[in-house]
Image 1 (cartoon, rainbow, N blue to C red):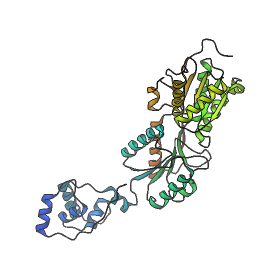
Image 2 (image 1 turned 120 degrees about the horizontal axis):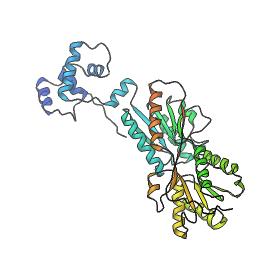
Image 3 (image 1 turned 90 degrees about the vertical axis):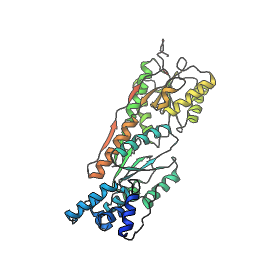
Image 4 (image 1 turned 45 degrees about the vertical axis):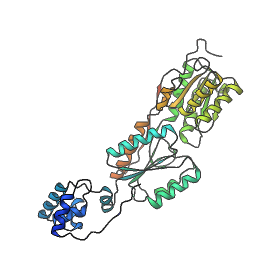
Length: 364
């Protein structure tokens, strides 16, 4: 975060002003320099910049000419203080180390910049204690933010009521809590879980396993429900295995060991994040399992690295760029005065690569 200091300058003499003008460049011209060159007060220049009435036409012309000569660019932070708007929004992310979050951050940063906003970025590391710390930091140190995008929501996680008491403009993205009356834009996790299960069954697989992230994250809960609805429809829920774990590559590796070494049933695995799926590929490499000929694998998210894996990963595209872009647009509409609630679920899609194979003889 950049901290700007404010200095009070005394008026320059005519000789000093002439020398100062020669030294002036667009990189270091200040509002005081504009005031000195125009022969007016700093407060008058501030009124002109912020389009406040009661600046005489002749004076406005002098200020405009001074701004043009000095190639002065108004300080957005100072202007924001005057207007009670800093053009500054906050983004709370769950964990910087999760690849999908980096894609989300980039999309949000690009759209924020396009709409004229700067970004304050904080992470909770998906930790209960840090959730509360971040909440207090935002309330105590960043209460002048124009709005907040929350990409860290868990059931019984961040205290949304505390934030709503300070920030009137809030949007949830990528993660949400279904029962909260707050704007959000997420992927349809239920439909994503269905797409994965249906594809594996169409490939002839009946013995399925699913590795899910923690169900206090509503997206994972939805993906499980979508997966379950399909295996129930096909009457194969009794032979399916669902393992709930954390979201890391290491947890995907350990879950794969349980599925293959302990249960020895599944011919296909649905990992509810690409990072978990990459963990399965690591385990397969270590143990010599053949993906896809022995085990078909489908991931979820379509992160950049999924197509670069040892076996290019079939996955569900969670449209992360669109999520980030839409979240900023929703927040901008809120800041501009929209009062209606907007809760958007984007439709996921299947991306077919090399990690799944159609069984020549469907397993019983």
